[in-house]
Length: 174
Image (cartoon, rainbow, N blue to C red):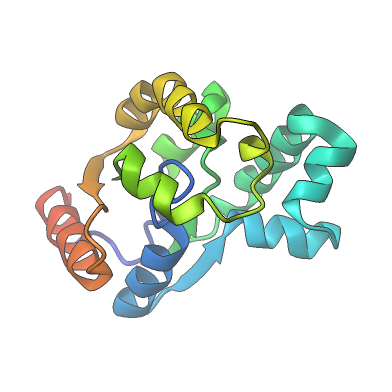
């Protein structure tokens, strides 16, 4: 198994299961789990949609980058990033240099089914499924290039997904 203090970073689009899988993975590895979006909300005292409303996406991304810089330094954690964290080249470099990066890949249909009733700022549009498609078109190559390993999460058997992550992490262990 990889070193116990090496952080594990989960990347992927909204609805891929980063928070759900991250909690289960952390429990299995007996590690601390951190959800970057939850941590940002706790520190600012407002929810992400409110940050988007007041500061726009660029303000949110600035806050996210600062928080990732801090949180990625914590050893032995499982960190779920926001879906757009990979848009920033500096975030991609940071994650790749500080830990193991796991891309949780999901199909558009599964993703839409998981997030369609949420209050996600980027889905406030007349065509949320089309927006998800365009975000994936923009980000898929970034997820792939940043990841040390990729796991599909369309299957709702999240424990099986965690098992696959653990197996793949073992395979790439130094």
